[in-house]
Amino acid sequence: MEKKLLKRMENFKNTPDRLKFELLRELSELPEEEHITNFLLNVVENEKYDRIRINAILNLKKYESDLIVEKLKIIFSFERDKSVRLVIVETLGERDSDEIEDFFQQVAIKDLNDIVRATAIRKLHERENIDQTVMHDLLLDVIQNDSSVFPKQIALSALPCYATSTTYDKLRNVFFREEMLQMKKLLFKTLEEISTKFELDLDVKEPGDPIFEDTKKARRKRRKERKKKKLDKDDYLYF
Image (cartoon, rainbow, N blue to C red; front, top):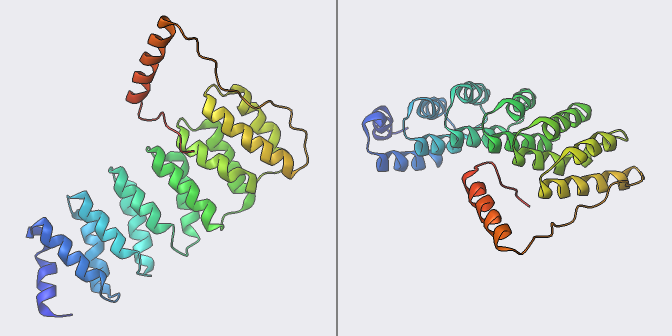
C-alpha cells in the first residue's frame, strides 16, 4: 500500500467529510488486507457521522474475515442509531456463519426498532439455516406478541413455509383478536394458504371493507383519525 494512502488513513479523524468519503471509495476498490479491515472497523466504531460509518460497513461486505462478524456484532450491541444497526444486519445477513442465526433471533425479538426487527426476521428466512421448528416458534411469537405492524407482516409472509397442522388453530386465535382491518386481511390470507397446504377447512370469513357513514359528523371523525394516524410512526403496512 502506498505511503500517501497510509498517511491519509492515519489522518482520517481530522479529514473533511468529503475527503473521508473519497478515501473510503478508494479503499473499496482495493483487495482485502488486514490493515484496511482494521481501519474500516475503527471507522465504524469511532466515527461520529453516521453516513460515513454506514459507508465503512458497506465496504466491509466483500471481506471474509471472521473478525468482521464478531466486531460488528459487538458494535451493534452498543449502537443507538437505527440506520447503522439496520446496515449491520443487512451485512451480517450475507455471511456464512452459524452464529449469525442466534444473533438474528435475539435482534428479531429484542431490538427497539421495528424495521430492524423485521429485517432480522427476513434475513433468517432468506438464509434457510435455522431449524424449522425454531423458526416456526419465532414467527408465531412475533405474530402474537410484537407491538408493531411491520415485523408481524414479515413473519406472516414467511409462516406458511414453516407451518404444521397445528399452526392453523394458533393463528386463527390471533385472527379473532386482531382489530386492525388490514392486518386482519393479511391474517386471513395466511390462514387460507395454510388451510390449503394441509387440506383443512377454512372456517373464518374474509374481512370486508368497512361501510363509511356519509354524514358531516362521521367525516369530521374520520379526518381526526387520519391526522392521528399521521402522527403515529408505527401505523403503516407494506402490502
